[in-house]
Length: 259
Length: 156
Image (cartoon, rainbow over all chains, first blue to last red):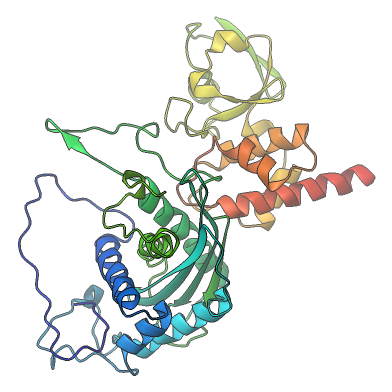
């Protein structure tokens, strides 16, 4: 139950889903669709309330607290780590959100036609991450990403340069998933076979620059390889909603007409 | 037998004329720096130079390059001191590294033609080389840095 919002009487359920194709691994695994749905929906709620996206998110997140899963009669496998050593602390999520808002110039942004910032924040692999993605759409509906800002609390960081490289790469990987990555099956076989029918982001399509902001911390070190991926798709789609008014609920984005 | 010249050395290799150059480089010559990626000239991992031009060795038949100057990543410099290699180290570009020999060869071919490439020049020249780790922004920075190193070396 990775829903960090301070909502009284929260009820989260899941039901069995048929999966005729064996589900394998992809960088950041189930976080991709969990973050996509939750981070898109909170953006929809903020839009419905007519509020600033980040301001609304922080309000719903509530005051900093450690989530008490027992009191909420919920379980959280917490990546196999004990919750007393690696608690779910909403204050750390708030902190990276405030950091990314400041570094990306969220509050100072000026509305420009065909260009907007999109936001998402998500804890995965015990790390707290928030991202702001600058998205541009041209007259033909082509999407480009001039800039990504990511704020990361991964506990005590031993090698900051490696952490930056991982989050730069995760922004590119997340962009591939969001814009073009699609595997389909027909007549019992997968239809894609190589990069001609399974494109991945090239240098001209990837975010032009990604700025990684690391929270100084002496807490236990946590994941950095995957946590940068889940935020990118919802942040891009939230920006596209701000630009076009169109809400994307199906990935990859290439299956939606943007203009 | 096919005669080819790789990294300044002449070889007679026992290969069919239509064997991909990549197989000859890797299997016959044992130069394994050049990588197999897609086998269809879409990903750029197999990039080498043929007469100074970036070429995809996976779709280049060995007979078509007989008599031409072929250069692989092993021949770029004897000690890793080519400006592109220096810049790659300075910018900490590689992650898993698999695509990097192809990226470096593509970058070196670009800089041989264009000593001061713009961001747009780089995007155009490097778009054929996929990096799944996502090191693109460091690749772009490293190419600008390599251009600077080359300009400074020329002044000396």
